[in-house]
Length: 164
Image (spheres, rainbow, N blue to C red):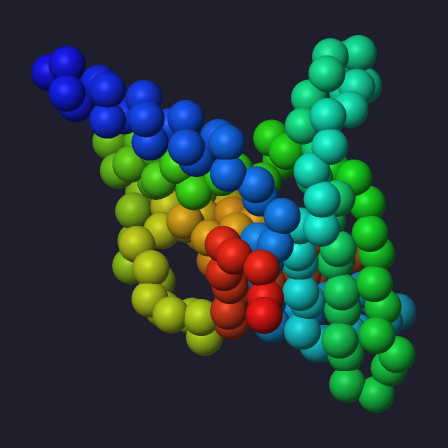
């Protein structure tokens, strides 16, 4: 038992110490409103990590995230902003979330999902069209269908390491 606890602690320490700079995910992206429609590739990437004060005044890690939209027939649009690290879970936290999903029905249920980026055992979040898996930026597939807004992200590629 001591060995198991030591290994879990060591793994946790290493994953927390690892920089998240370079994590990226690419999605087929679609968005439509009553007045506009947009399709393209959305690439999200962690550019930097910095300790900053949150809205509550606590010091927390924030990720500088680039969201670059490559759409056909339009100029590339890139937005870079600082976001709380807690918004995007690391690989260890995502593994734990998917494991909890397997046993706690109020979170969701485990489903095998196949998207352009591969096949995954993902947590289909309860009461949402969202599948969360062990990938940077959490989403394997996310569909938001409201009266004034439709959005769809489908994972097409990702890496926990910086693009070469």
